[in-house]
Length: 233
Ligand code: HPA
Image 1: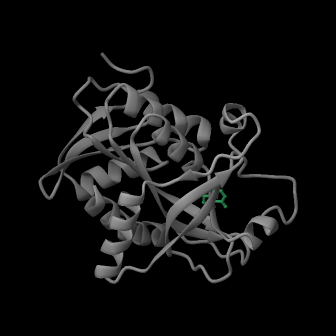
Image 2 (image 1 turned 180 degrees about the vertical axis):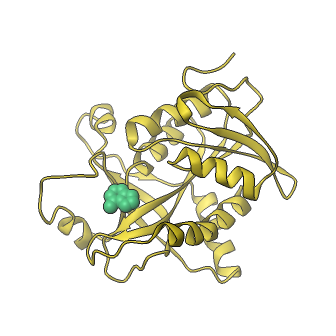
């Protein structure tokens, strides 16, 4: 039996899943990094593949953009398919001047404006955090392989476009490295249902300096992050 939004049978998804926002990224990674990749779902165009990496079974599933979409996939992966480890592999906009395009952030925690969390925690603030074991493995692997990595805090927002000028100033002063749209709900739901989660984010633009990466640069720098994620699972 499939879940509501993923067209896989039970057993077709590995215990460890990489979760890019972009479903075409899932297809690209499956075709270029995995051996014997099989597409298990095309429901809503949100591709999912299972294959092996250095002999280990691993899946890669698109999550879509924003916490509403991402939360659906995380919930079904864990509760319907028994997934144990989820590593988001995405992009973020940096809000610290020292972070350049292509830098990799390993999210220790994700603050954010998730309305789901606002309701769940009755307006109080839950500190959504990564799994320490996955986080420390990722940092260790990057150091050993001379890949620069920035462990730190991120913020997940549901509004890419916003009315407010200087919206990130207070978050910048409180140490947030970058802005994405998924990590807060991933960490929250994974913790709720006993799965482990991590988010690795490549800086695709710097919101403070206005720098933006070209499509080609995004692809090349994304590969460093994929290597870390595949080694960690
Ligand atoms: N905002 C939110 N999410 C993002 C951004 C951004 O500027 N860049 C990449 N993901």
